[in-house]
Image (cartoon, rainbow, N blue to C red; front, side, top):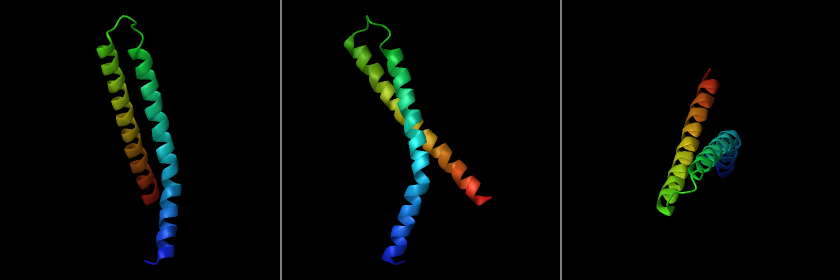
Length: 82
């Protein structure tokens, strides 16, 4: 492969993956927002419990984003194979 072919291939991958990544980021951010709103509802929680819930919210948002990327990627591959 020449250098130009590699650049073309990288551009194509970037173009095709951008909608998948954007969708996953929106899904992850929405999940984090929803869970953080739920975590801070109880005002009488100790800081330790609150920080634990915030950490869990961030983890769950990252997991949701990863799952969305996997699902979208598989759907994209299936669509392009047919």
